[in-house]
Figure 1 (cartoon, rainbow, N blue to C red):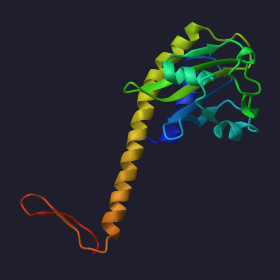
Figure 2 (figure 1 turned 30 degrees about the vertical axis):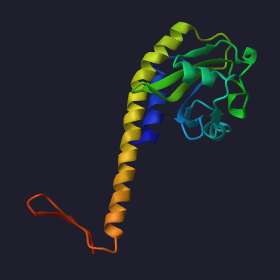
Figure 3 (figure 1 turned 180 degrees about the vertical axis):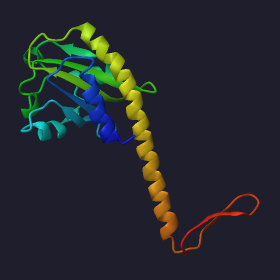
Figure 4 (figure 1 turned 135 degrees about the vertical axis):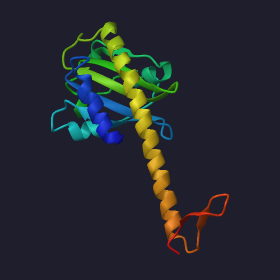
Length: 183
């Protein structure tokens, strides 16, 4: 359940669902109220680093805002005609776009984007196919995020427990020692 490996696998498997030139997974950062790129596939080597450094602010005019707030897919037939679309070096060639929310436990945890370098490539039917895929992907991402949080908490607990200057002994109700720190 390594999150980075999972995100990479999701984007590779997405190719079995829909034809794309590039795609990305953005995870929602509640603190900054933004979507942060965490995985990208299909980008040229010269711009893949740029694609992974994208942070999408939740401005009301942006397509990503509509995806997240309405919890529904957005299909853009031609991004050059979309008023809220912002061109970056990594999105320079994109013409058609699908944005699908990643929803786990009725909460948007991110967004999956599918890109084509051809205008009018995607339809609402394509978006529905991606939504079905995204539902499964969101569950896997949420589980991986939970595992990561648990591993971080366990590492923090272990460090505090082992590095304490005081003797710590953990027993059960019968007084049997279950664990003790180095002290």
